[in-house]
Length: 262
Length: 262
DNA sequence: GTATGCATCTCGGGA
DNA sequence: TCCCGAGGTGCATAC
Image (cartoon, rainbow over all chains, first blue to last red; front, side, top):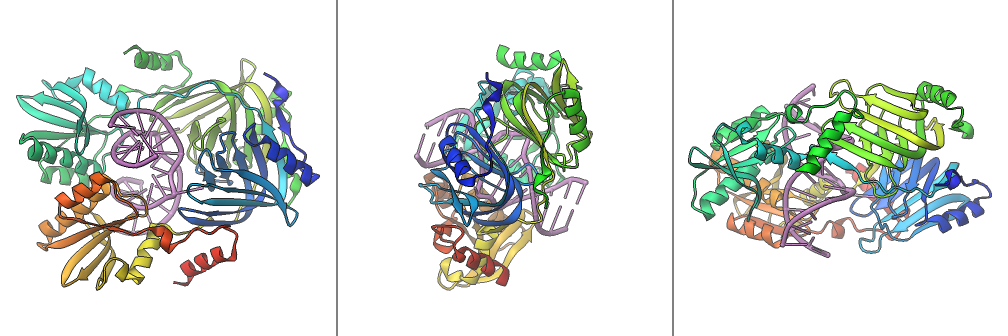
């Protein structure tokens, strides 16, 4: 690993910089800081007058333009953006790309250039996550009493015409289907559950109970569930996947080992 | 505007860099490039072994960690992340933050540092967009014949217990409610419409037609609509907001003027 | 390729 | 503040 692979490109003469940039696309990550304006046309039209922003172009041809605030980029292009071209227009650096399939275009001009760099970044590591919805479902399947005492799981990810049912089971000789959400329930969740119930009643001529599992329920959702004879069950993921004081603690490893070990 | 406000911070001595960084949080955008590992614990747990990535910390305390691929950051924190602290641990630069309210933590260590900079970025411009769903609804309201000849709009954004109805109108003396989507319809859209229809039939004892407007309909969605006596109407936003060959063309301005002028 | 649903979704608007 | 839905959603996964 060569530490010098992070390389600052002189911003002048500009034509040399443009040559370097065009040669570097697809090879290295490009980072440009400067005052710029941006125009996007595609699924939406957007314009952005001059402001100081960071432009990142990755070697998969994804493009990200970040302003001084917020997590979400101001403009972007998904990977394989289509040909990216740097050029000089009215003595300003301009980046232009047009995605062939969708015809969408993004054009960014830099009246002021502060900084250009490229970087041969290597990253073989994969982001490993634990504690998403599927992990919560797995946990509930292993601990069905959390849903209710005596609950028995029959199937998970049971596929129906109206979508996959998270958990299907039996409780007190009655069939139950369960929709699991890791976040606060919303009206659409309740409706999704109703859809499943309707499916079983219409297609399979079966009477089933429906339970929506979530850490929290707004009043409106509870009302809707009640009106439709559906049930709610509060289950906090935090009691199952407690947040550690420091994520580097060895205990975090335990969680990941649990995921792999199952 | 001082062009020198983009400032490269020497990576050694490291303790000086750390001091500079801690003094710069909330003041300037910070950009760090280097090989790092990252641990997040909160709504989910994630671990990321060493790889070359860019870390951006904005003055609103949003944090973004980008790897070499994709538009989506590997790790991030929303604005007002909570106190951000740089320190040296095992002679490595470490960034740590813990959000008070949610207790979630993000820790990033840099075994290799390639580059540190800070930037007093100014951006007074707002992203102006045209052609989102609300613009499409506005256009349809002005051109109701696109929905069907003789259609008359009564209200838009009509609020009900089950959510706001995009367009409410009358056609051939029959009430019609319309749900507008700019993107391809999906099963949930069809269900959302059904919810509205049920609301009118149950609460207001009114029989109403329901139309889902979208540029494209998967077969399954069409089937569901049909089964529930709902209608589909194909309307391509592209015929209304055509994509320009170059987004900087003066014609793009026309679109934005239209938005403001209405 | 299309279809579908989760997401540390983010973000803005409205009550 | 919470609630709710749009999004240039991104993205993985199943088909």
